[in-house]
Length: 138
Image 1 (cartoon, rainbow, N blue to C red):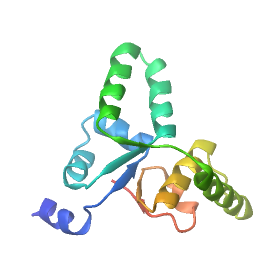
Image 2: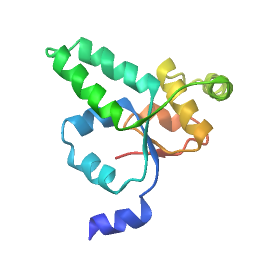
Image 3: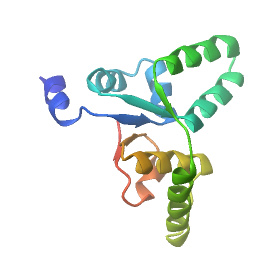
C-alpha cells in the first residue's frame, strides 16, 4: 500500500545527486522503491564527474568505472550551458547574501535543477538553503 500511495504523490521526473546514486548502487531500499515509481531520471554531468572521481579513488577503480558507465548509458545526462550559468550566478549570490556558502559543484547541480524545473533528489542538507529549489529527500 505504501508504494501505491507514493506512486500517486511522488512519481515524476527527478535529477539525482551523487549521494543518491551511491545509495542506489549500494542497494538502499528507499532509493530503489522511489526509482521504481519515478518517471524520467536525469543526472548532471557534474555528478558523473563526482562519481568517476570516487571510482578512481576506490579499491576497485576499473569495476566501479564500468558500473558508472553502464548506469550513464541508460540515463539522460544534463550539461551546463549559458542558461545554467545565469541561474548559477544568481544562486551563488543568494547564498553569499545569507552567509550560507555551499560547495561549487552543488551550486551547479542546483542550477540545473532550477533551470530545467525538475526536482533535485539529495540527502545533503546544505541544499535546504537554496531559495525556490524543489528538493526531495529519499
